[in-house]
Amino acid sequence: MKILVPVDGSPFTKRMLAYLAAHDEWLGGAHRYTVLTVTPAVPARAAAVLDKSVLKAHYADEAERVFKPIRTFFDKQKIPAEFVAKVGPAADVIGEVATKGRYDLLMMGSHGHGSLGNLVLGSVTTKVMAHCETPVLIVR
Image 1: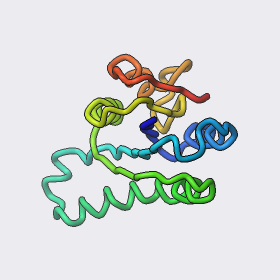
Image 2: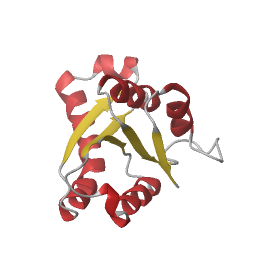
Image 3: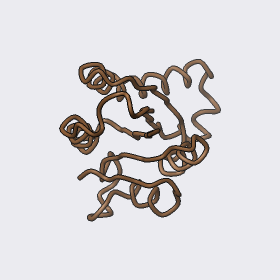
Image 4: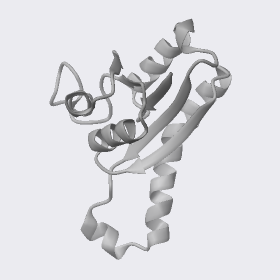
């Protein structure tokens, strides 16, 4: 199974990873994992005055901050994974990557680093579920 794992480093990402580790059916060579993090874009006015290399370094640093503990987790579990970093609105990018990549499953935490406006599910999770055709496994 080809599985997309969107992450943001939040406690709900950590819970989702704990779920993954606790269930043997998700481990082993039968699944291919792609770990995705989406960094919000720097506002256009600010980006216009920044050197492109500075902006690129900012996005890379933000992605690596999220990926570092998750790489450790996947290495410890001996699960091979591809790590992909994108920039933009999280829900839109996640849905686009899932569709274009023809993933069989999206496995994500129920909340992230967004606002507290949505009490049942996080706003990114809600938008992904509403607009993505890929099945979504939400871990709370």
